[in-house]
Image 1 (cartoon, rainbow, N blue to C red):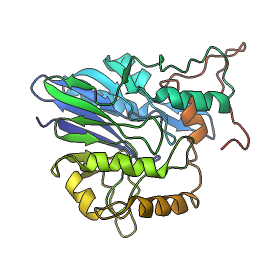
Image 2 (image 1 turned 45 degrees about the horizontal axis):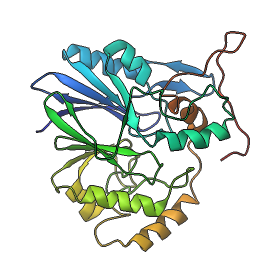
Image 3 (image 1 turned 120 degrees about the vertical axis):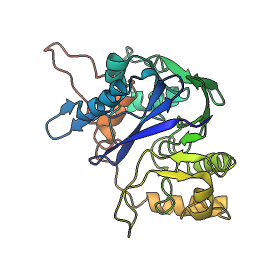
Length: 287
């Protein structure tokens, strides 16, 4: 079956959030929602999430799932806020525990921070089949960018998070803790085994050189034929060499430290300290 897909693009973080709709039952899933965050002031706002929420309400939809494809390093998830307004269950891949254990050490979290993924309502296992209304969906573990990345095939629509980008931009970096270029190559081959006509929805676009507009929808066939990093015929060794050399030139995302701290908590802010104020940590020379 073919779901309807509504995209919401955030210029500040180049992030695309999606509402995936079963038109027969008027049910939906929200994928990779975004909480606005101004790092200079330390202030959050819900402007982006409110636009998505308003659209869902205007369409008369019932929200079943609020899915994050992975622990994002470039924006804060709005999953708890979306749930408070629309209902539904928050969810992420079950390898979230691997990411939580790594960053629990980096941020020196105390015993109250659990590394079992229990902050989320549901943890998807690799190959798990579920439904959005009457449309069958499947979770596909696609690690490499992070150990916990999970792509979601919903009807004929594939939501890949940061695994792959538009054909003229390439693929995701693999130099975050737990990332691995060879593993990403293997994950992309799993996606390339899907039918060529499968629609592919990306979590980011940065406008490749020579392109004047943002794009975030491709197909499996287009990626196989044209992706500048990993098109058909690219060997695993070639990809690892390219990805490793390229990653060594990249700066860390400007929101990685606040993003990971919040997203590993399923979007919940740290508990207030004794003065009633919430704080994020800024570890020095940790990444």
